[in-house]
Length: 262
Image (cartoon, rainbow, N blue to C red; front, side, top):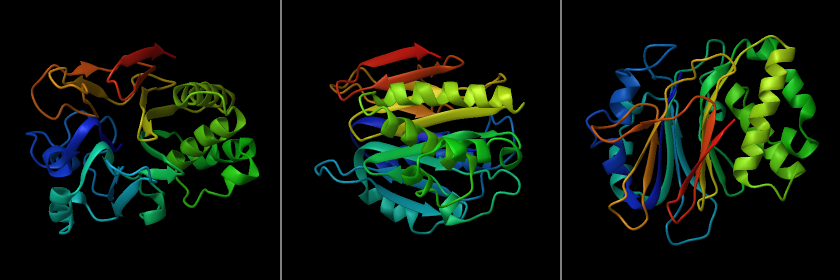
């Protein structure tokens, strides 16, 4: 399974998030402590962020290289500064190609999305049922073949179907749909996700068969914007909170956090 790192709050330099912590995402790529499937995350990585002063679509930088082998990232990370950053290192599910189309974060419009987990036997179980639910427009944006991108498509489908729903409500509806599908097709879904439009951050820890993959959050209340970090594993010593099983956290620009049980 992959490892995630998300930051939301006052603008921060990417280098400080990726490289400085004692148990950084770089280290988690080759020496994770809490993965329940796989041993390393060497099948690529991706980073998505929003420009702090422009209301534009998010930017992404992706590679199929192990994150520790990318010679450009150290320099780029000193330059990139943002108040909303979603990143991950990939441990590919067997039989899923190592291809840029399968690299996260996935984007659509102003949304960024990352997923850690899996749908067991995805192509034999929920791939076709999920696609059958999607509108033609959302179906047409799928460019890869991962379960992660199909989960994102299902969220987008609910955003399109229920435009008055909030992002967290669309995620909640999607996870319930996945639970129903998993029961119908006798499979399991593990879905730790983060999704943002640059102004809100929504994250979930979810599994139809516990335990869900590890996920933690930490908030620095000493700063005006109360920045929040969400990570698969704590990056450093601190007051990290373990996500409750099957829960959704959402935070706005004011830094207020709301936790909802699924």
